[in-house]
Amino acid sequence: TKGPKPVLPNNLRKRIVIPIEFFDLFINKEMIQLMTDNTNKYASEKNAGALGRKWKPASISELYAFIAVIVYSGIVRIQNSKKYWSTDSEWPTHPPSKYISRTRFEQLKRYFKISNTEDERKKFESSKNGIDEKWYAKIEPLFSSIMNTSQKLYNSGSNLAVDEVMVRFTGRSQDTYRIHNKPIPKGFKIIAIC
Image (tube, rainbow, N blue to C red):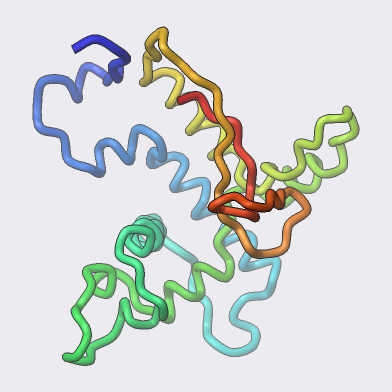
């Protein structure tokens, strides 16, 4: 068939690839280690465990499980997230409950940090060039890593269209748009190549 084709690394060509191998192309072990370190550093800054639940430093395997729960909850939608760990026979059992407890998931969710807080502060302070780059400081360097990997692995065809995409968001942010009479009236407006 004609059109764009992904450019996979040699070690992933002409064989059956498991999903974690694709995941590792975008979020590799070094990035997971960085996020683990930044999460632990942020938890330390916030004095985690001083009151309430005791905090133990996050490990790489826990961070993989944490991300897996987030991905799984995006695919299997349930109104109450506590149901993912329900042992009630009325509800189905969900795979994430085998790898991380609900308490630990909630702890990691509270202190999860992608960027280094010092780098984040510097980014906020240096954003004076007329282009507001502050919004993605919290997801750097993951943002750049995924962008670079995507550019390396995808060869676009010649038939492209640029379009606006609205991503629903109802929380508080100064970066959202409200466009009346649209299927998604409020959210983040993203310019996408389609």
